[in-house]
Image (cartoon, rainbow, N blue to C red):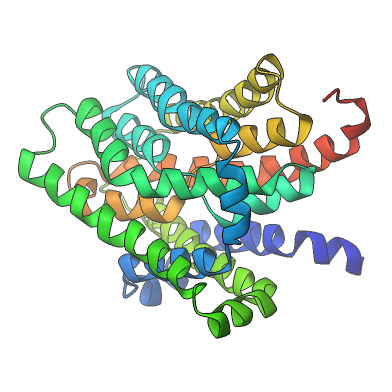
Length: 322
């Protein structure tokens, strides 16, 4: 029992917290409403970058092809598929699916799930670094393309600056911190504890988003039609699993070894909720209040599904051919 709880503690807290936030959003809104998402995102990225082993990134840069392919899938295939599927959904859900598909790879969970499955962590680390560093340009470009005239030219420039300040600078500061030997030793010594803190920050963001969703469900002035919501949920799950499968099988065609195939699958398909929620609240909340639904659906479903997929891949490891 204790071993089960040790492996599933985050998933159990996530499931219980999200369920409670959906049923009783008022329990969370009093304190989540005062949270500054930019600080949460920046703090999470700084902590994760501070613990990223720079030597692993340097080593992976000598063989970057798996990471670059994962980046193509994450920033090419997934947003393009979201853009096409979104045409069959109501505007709010169409915008929401595009937002979550266009943001960078998530940090803590992508590394953790890759490790659980026996994948190459260094590949995921490089994808995280590259997708975060280029988000200010690529995420903005996809949202500009997919939202047509919804965003003004000035807002697009503001979005680029926001992503640059919120994503690139904290990651840069975190990696610079590793250049100081005392700070590097501190990060390495307490790496697990720091990673847990980073995961808890993500959990806070998830609960904030879930409480907002719960409020919309219970409010009479914001009608939530079960049919389109179910369609959006199926679309989110399909996009995630489809991209993950594309990473696994295309990795085989490209001749990647098993560990890198797994890394490509998880890195290409996992997306970060904090950044998506930041963009939603800043630019889309007033006009598309239900766009938050796909953000939560995609992120929560990826955490639940990938937990079991990672264990399945690990158990099947002897059947894979490198």
